Amino acid sequence: MTRVILALFFGAAAVLLGSGLLLSSQALLVSGIALTLGLGVGMALRRKGTERGSRSETSDTQALHPALLDVALNEMREGVLVIDTDMRVVASNRAAQTLFTKGDPKLSRLTELTRNPAIYDAFLDAVRGIERDGVRVETYVSGHKIFDLRVVPLRSSSAAATVGAVGVFFDISRLERLEIVRQEFLANVSHELRTPLTSILASAETLESSINGHSESDKKFLSIIHKNAARMQRLINDLLELSAIENVKVDVEPVRLFALVEDIVNSLSVAATEKSITLENCIGKDVEVFADPHRLMQMLTNLVDNAIKFNLEGGTVTIDHRRDDDDIVRVADTGEGIPAQHLDRLFERFYRVDRARSRNLGGTGLGLAIVKHLARAHGGDVSVTSRLGEGSEFTIRLPRSTS
Ligand code: ADP
Image (cartoon, rainbow, N blue to C red; front, side):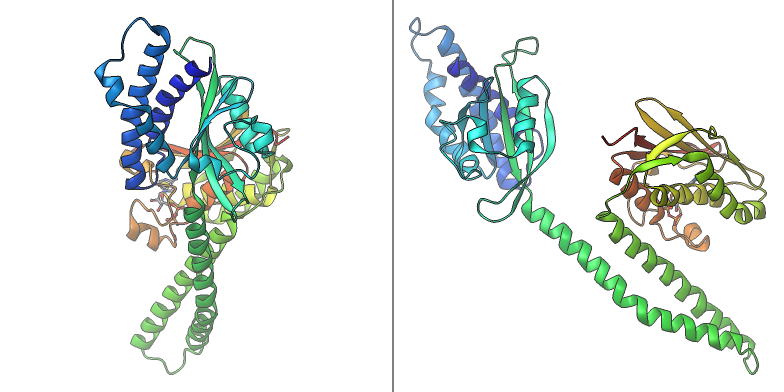
């Protein structure tokens, strides 16, 4: 049995490693070797298992000696762990062994190696036939480390029963640290810029209000200073908001959606009237969703605000709700639409279809990035569909309940 699991493991490890989660070119090279060796040795071992004693070793199994695979697997930075259906560890490489404090992974049950529920649940799911990807695992064995764990079931064919599971631990501690540095840098810079900018804005406003004695060109320059300082202030506020949101923890509670949307419609009615746009709140009066009310308000305000800004004179903005496994809130407009090639990148920071246009409309290019972060903080997501000349639909998906 162990021989079968190992044979499958070599093949599965190779596929896992070749699947693109690797972070460095060195790792990619190693995965290439592992792929070749893994598949080769996996198949060879399987063949040996079924034809044991009846045939001599072929030249390719001699060439792909398991010792080479040992070296390749042990030199990898990624930890590889394989278990059987009794949750016993049947193989591991050196990197995996350094992940755990207690015992020798080769001899232990998974529960003896680690009490980490994220690891245990991922392997248990895989043994039950469910592949798990992107499992975040934190360890404190030699300092604080963060891993991205992928675990797949081991089977001899897609229809066969699971005989174990193989997991690969990718160390993402460095990436996470860089991400924190980036976030802190952005927050600090924005914060530092805010004070001098407030003072420039205040001075420009004071000068503008004392109109006497200003020539026409003075007024023009003052207005340029004022306009651009105000724009920078909006940008900095959005950047600070975005950094705050990146780590936000949402407090979810039942929210009556109709009333919340009604507040948004009222607060944006002046902007809508200026362009003769009709705002339609089509939410059922009794609909309740699970969300952080303040954050949901922020998301929908951004979407409705855009739906007005990028709409045509006399257009319509509709906000409605439906329910499947999740609650789905949709903001649809009859505006100009978004060309298909932009849709994939629309939720990136500073991404704008038409920069000059967005700037003229007072946009910062951060509104949709904020919506995306907030939707994800709720455990949901946001998506867009659009048809040129017909309009766009932004859809927020919220889990029904967090429990
Ligand atoms: P902005 O501050 O420019 O509105 P957003 O992040 O909110 O930034 O939006 C990014 C870009 O997506 C906008 O500049 C615009 O090009 C496009 N966009 C957003 N919503 C719509 C919409 N409802 N219709 C057409 N284009 C839109």
